[in-house]
Length: 114
Length: 110
Image (cartoon, rainbow over the protein chains, first blue to last red):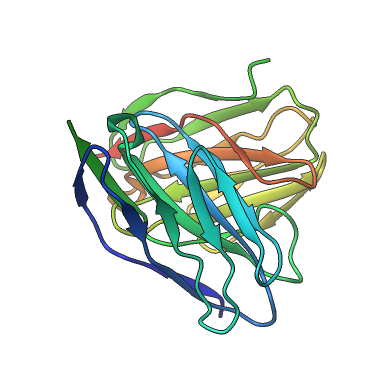
């Protein structure tokens, strides 16, 4: 079945450092791909998405490119802030399924220190 | 605009007790979902609904029940609580768009 694998955390960084969180997927066809972010005590919020190969999603300085050849959707940010401390989830929506029946990765906790 | 509202925020249950987790949304979304989040496991879909009167099982439905009598409300029922149901529960909704999540209910069964 469809699945998402993302790097384990926690990832600890200093402010202004470069962040990469790896995400790879297994799926039939070309699913839509998402990054969600969860701040402490809150629900998940959509960070960015990509719906077809080579699409680049971007938001709040974060970027991720849908790479069909490597089945990957790695999340990057050039200069992190303390406010970026959160748990980040990679997710896919199968090609033939409705919005919302997502397969999530296990989540990666990111801790940014001043 | 409140979005997706879940109550309660926290709850402790004894084994065998029952409870209902409430979820309501004010965005007129057709689709609603219940997920559970366990440490290191991501989110797993429990039940979902594509509209009032229609519900279906997700990946991990055992031990839970749902109903969808209105577009706005999608309660999740635990009939006989078990320690394995200790988790954080998230309700979400959508309308042909990515999900909007509530802030979650943290449930502990002891």
